[in-house]
Image (cartoon, rainbow, N blue to C red; front, side, top):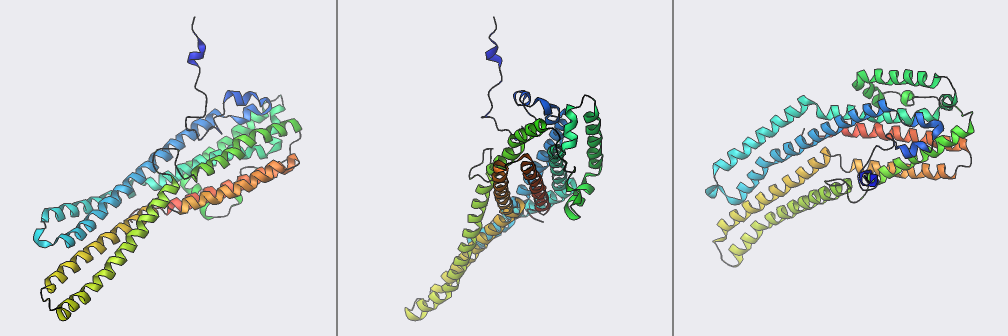
Length: 374
């Protein structure tokens, strides 16, 4: 006899999940029978997963091409600095030729990235994905609409289909919709009009469900994004900020120190020649000056490269944005948890949707400016 416990799914908690606010588990749905149909929409989940996959793909391409472009662009500059340190007598021209070839490849990668428009496609996919999420949760602010769930007719399904058709039709011109969202009036930020709930039991289930799926979920996500260590592979936002900041600052400080040291070489040479009679300091002065100038150039290039890295990954703007978002969410959670009435809790949910919309707008504007080289 087969033991079914051996085939049961693993309990949640160890696998990294982001979108279980939309793809709600059956156990959760069973606790909210009155609004079950509104909590999970399979067609929305399918569309969301498509946009999420496209966003991840184009983000990966944009950042990968950007990093390689930056590294290849730095190669000829770093090689030029090393050549200054080594000297022309011991230098092989093949190294310079190879470095210049890498620089040319970096230009070609820039042209490729611009032609493929990975940054724009990434932003468009994020816009569609997150507006779908907002559309889903904002419908719970429309008490009259959600109240149709307890109606024996199919009025809820008919109205939901109409609203779905409207938002997906607007996505056919996703770039225009995104630019309107970013650059013009914000009257269209909300998909619904806030209306009261006639059925208190339905309203209470909405409050309880959205407390977990929207309020706490958004807060946990913001906290996770600002954590010192990333849960995923790769560096967290804080690690990227700290590492790039230290490299940029230390390299620039080192370059300044080396330049100051180079200015002291002629003084030391003059003292050695006139004070101690060491006339053989002149060739040493030229060699030391060359060493210092090459080292200063090398460190300056490292500092510039680190700052270009920060511009490409929008460091520290992104981490600061999530910090502010997290703080605003904490305030909303405090108001939501302490609200004495359902109406006050609904007002807190409306405020959360406004804050989430502002955060999406800020994120997209920030990523539209992201660039690694030019």
